[in-house]
Length: 295
Picture 1 (tube, helix red, strand yellow):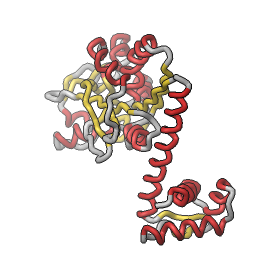
Picture 2 (tube, rainbow, N blue to C red; picture 1 turned 180 degrees about the vertical axis):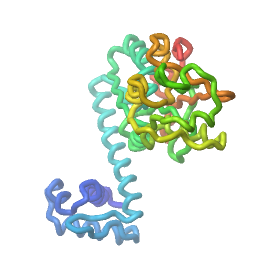
Picture 3 (cartoon, helix red, strand yellow; picture 1 turned 135 degrees about the vertical axis):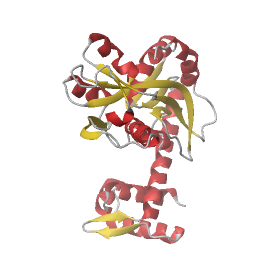
């Protein structure tokens, strides 16, 4: 497959327009169209169809677009790595979900920087799906995710610790500081997380495992902290990592709901590409320091 042609196709797919891609690439629109037709002929499938003034990808086109993006991100990473070698400067790019970004990584990163001041560290925040995508596309070196169901043919997940989760409410809530059955929880308004969040996956798994209806939908919030703030303000119930609510429980702005015979935790995983052979020095450092963390 000709990489020049693949690059043209990837730009067309990204922009959703042959005309815009031609302008960006500084070539004529007929030339772009001819390259797409050549690529389709070479691989024997149709990649795009017309849609109004733009284009629509076929399922084969979607697959090739994703692979093309991944390939060109890798190309950029190779260039960047060689530039850092020449400049005798290194960097580490990490994608992480909320819990690890806020409660696990800060002290680890601080210690790593103190030992390696010459290395630049970049951390991007996302949910499980976006972290996996960034790792797959070579936009970051590795990621950290908290989730209960792992599975991707191109990614490896290594468990490094367990994080307990608690149900929390406002102290004025009728279930505050009580031990109840999981069926009683389903009768109360709940703060749901967005689709793609590991916390939402956990909530659904808990109730499905116990053959219990999901809690009543109260509202949906993106982010652990945002959900907790709604509960603090007096509405509904949420499930949150214990490390994120311990201080608020001591202060009295939140209260726990204890669920009979239900202990909840999720595992923190390091997410890497299976194609990567060597373990990153940062990961080696993190593993040495995990015992010092209070979770």
